[in-house]
Image 1 (cartoon, rainbow, N blue to C red):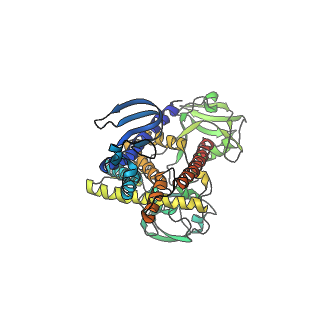
Image 2: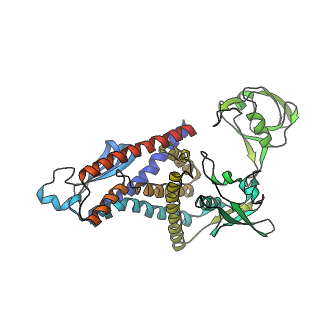
Length: 450
């Protein structure tokens, strides 16, 4: 229950910030263009708080925190007194209307630059992209990529973190191959050609690196219990933190992965655990609970986490930058996120990326909660990513989004007359249906993940 409210609160905070930024972009440019703004609302539905400024603009914080809007004086919506017609949105030039509509997504991109720049100034701690294991029969194995090698380049992209590696690979969906440069523990370079022909992200929640067979290095998990979930099979059996698991059913256990596999294969089956507790050996009868995996197969679940060896110091890198370098890096990273977002939309359309990977509000809430729990740097990174995605999404040429309005105004700019109201109304209906379908599909994906 705590996780639910934590994620919900983090979601409201993150979305509130990003929606405010987006709508303020529209608001600020509208004011500069001489348009009268009637209402600036964060959220929909019943107002919880509202107030007015000197220009009689109503500011609202509403009950449903799933978006926001800026309501402007507009003759197409309300009756406008003749003396105020010059203040209406529709009376402004096409270029002014384009600027007002485009200001929302642009504000999101500028905010991403700001958030990333602050993140770089605070300091970014990252893991070096060292290969922990390579899946047999995978694309990485065929390219002779080996464990303990560090990825330093993918194509012409310099790779400093696992995020760099992931984004670089995702940007190459649809290519035939890519050259990967690695460095071993003796600082010898190795150049490998990774075959990408036919590579797709067609499985839900399978990271790009995993799909090509690269398992990032992780410290070894020990056979010592670090945490026990409440209400779990481990708690019911009497397992305790610091217990060391020695054997199961009389057979010695050599690794945590071996124990996990054995538990997964034993749903609702009684297992005899031999554990070392301080200076004595305890025998416990443990019955793993049954859970169904994504393939619909029942698996055993114990409800314990292991003690993990510390990270090698040379695998962790903390980077701090000055204000100028941070802004430059923020611009570069924001541009990379923008181009990657458009690439992913194209790959969704062509089928290179499965629609199962779409996330909705629930997925964003979980991501927000997780990033907040990791601290300021992770939350800033999350805000930048979602801000870019919000900006890109709003630029899609769906008539109910900013991109649809821009499409109509650009057509008007070249035709020298507006698109007919009948055509616009039809477009809004189609756009609303498509948006509703996408939202429902994303929510279905979220629920299936849960």
